[in-house]
Length: 208
Length: 208
Image (tube, rainbow over all chains, first blue to last red; front, side):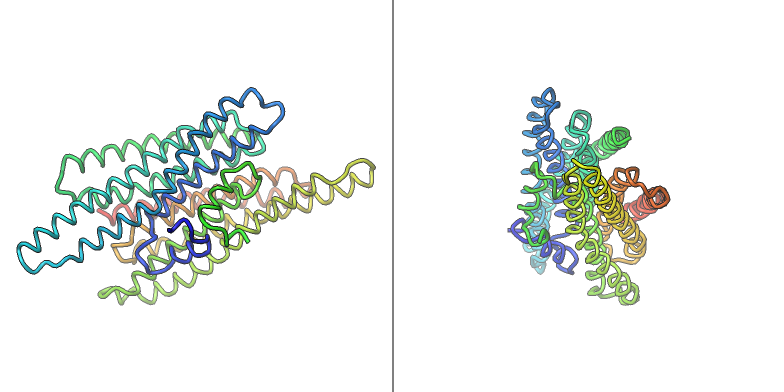
């Protein structure tokens, strides 16, 4: 399992010529780091004297950020499986017409997964951005920069996952699904970008 | 050693209330991922028929991106040590005047390191952004989105490391060094932001 490799091994594998892990799984890792940093802000704030009033919010945000972190962590392997499945489909025989039909169907099925998974990753990162505002507003000042790093990580993960939607969706025969995926993605990138920059600006303001 | 922990363990530790790893080491991880993805683009392109003309460039870029990846990977632990050192200095006794003087000197020394390390991280990420343009221009089309993820990761790592410079530099008694650090950082964030968005736009164009 990819998440059982060490950081050193993961970074080596990313840099190698092996097709996976690549940008898609990197996006999921960065998104999970973003969610994790929001959890950290909550966990540290929960232990601080004088910030008891924020405890209920912090517990609520942390429950959510931990769900998102676990979801994004699972997507690291899901992205690799989707990409490997797609490569396998492309390598199917294409000698006869029956071969060709089978190969094309397998490619379309794999492409659907290889569009849905990064779209779900982008959606999940948008949720990380969504909860980061309250963490940045109410979190302990000593860890507020971690909320800033978390929201930037979520933004980069969203845009990165988005690239795979933009690569795979246009190759889908199901034009309706493809158009819906691209339109949803565009909206996620646009609103996620705007919201994450607003949260980052808030963090900068709180840092003084 | 932090880079010998598994991805799962690292993400858990990031999310916990433990002060390290936090945003600073997350920045170094994300920067190392960015550099690693640029290496991947080069390594994949080097094996492609029809792209022999790009080989010399790819080898040159990869030598550089691997140096930067290894440097950023080392910074994960360096950032943790700098932060832990600073926390230790703040906890020194402050009963007598001699205690106070010793504590203040220790804090200033730690703050200097806790400014220099993220500044060096930001500089190194700017170098990743700098080499990503050629990788995005000349790399094999099938991995060009990885160059896009790489350059966004480097940008987010640069801005994230920058937060720690902005937190620590204002606390330094050496105003000349603090001003130089803040001014260099501002320039790095500005030019790195502009350049990385230009490379990302190029990637989007090459994806069609």
